[in-house]
Image (cartoon, rainbow over all chains, first blue to last red; front, side, top):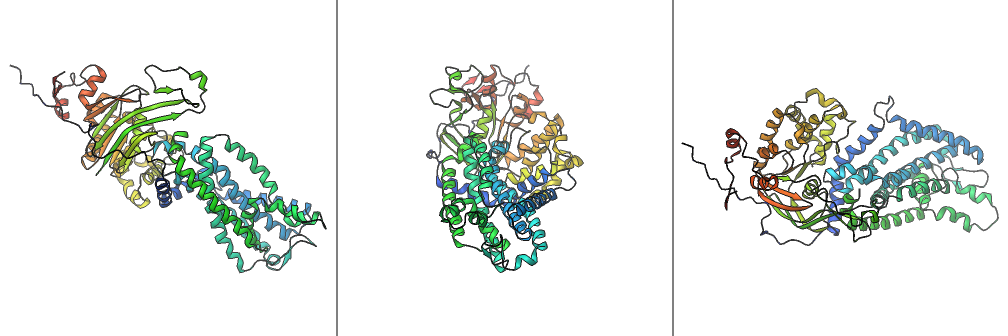
Length: 316
Length: 272
């Protein structure tokens, strides 16, 4: 007497039914809509990239006693050291040259961070990109946010320098005597530094996305950028000023000399933020150049996002 | 309505660092996808011409050899890879648990990892803070959650990852092999939770080599081979084709009853 064997039909499952309800849409990876959706949802996840950016800073100084204060300290040491040396070399008063160099260096650090860490953005997030679905923009914003936090730490050095040299900086002064350009000194126009930094950070966005995508595909780009930044640092008026360039060759035609700085886009980026912070003459043409680069840069970044956004997870 | 539709999708990986010449005519046997050689950059066809449609309530197991494309298929379903050819459409909130070593930071504590994972899965910080206690309870990790993740065993990491994904009510749950690293008691607990989750308007896709895990979690299956779907249908019939024998036949009666399976495999066309 064996119990009857129940004969249960294997339930029909829904996997891979031959008939599909909806017609297959055409492959839609390379569309503006998807690129735009990526950027939009990336920006919306502020808590995510905000948290990740903070985590990066905390991570770097985990278990060190001073923690992120090291960022501020190392900037202070560099600025004071270079400031003392170059003010003597270039014959400039320390009370003017130290603030000039400090601010220039802080802005440079931000730009440098966006450039070099931007090339590495997607490569260093390989694990996350391959394991969790998230908009690429999140990783770009993580990098820019991290640089912004570093910038904020470095700005403490500026505040100290400003407090120390408040007297001389608020009067009209010349960076180099006797024939440097006359600077008006710090005034309410210092507030222009806020939109200036905002604009530079917006540029950080396209730099990170564009260079990040290119570098993920062509791994030769990060070393190329790294070696060029060294040169760019010395070519850009950060540890020297355009005054010195002009004073060096008096009486000659000024054309090529000003071009050394004017043709360098980084000069304009540094100038829009440095000039208000240390009370230098501000020129609208710097803003025009930066805004122009912002528009062109974001256009290129959008094209890169449209065409290669979906490829990044294959390339990392 | 939760659904995943994939139409004739292929996933081709360009391999930039491999030398084309040395790979010419190289076609691997059982292991790995096909390696295309026409292009300048060698290409691994990890998935080829996949068409499938999953909907609410599906609990699908993925079986196949190493390198058959199971993990790649999971990533395609997660939206991490968009198909190089063909199309895919994913509707619903996806929560993947893939390789457990990656996607978690070993230097930060369990709590912070829970937070980051939750944020990635679309939660807000506040929502996650509310869930931390529940996750701590479910994972039984307790005070260990304050320790950096590098001090965790593999099983503990699995607990953490499962704790997070099951606490946030995902609609599409994708699990890769590796969750077998937890002990039996926890697995039983997780099973109930996962099955509940699928019942509450969800979907589960699970890749595994362990039959017993598949029995517990899935009712249908897809057999992947060399990047193609070789078979799909009920778990039992696919496993029988894949293994060449009915894996349910030597289970005891109680287990079978619990799983709702008959002692002898029957299909629409009769006994196999």
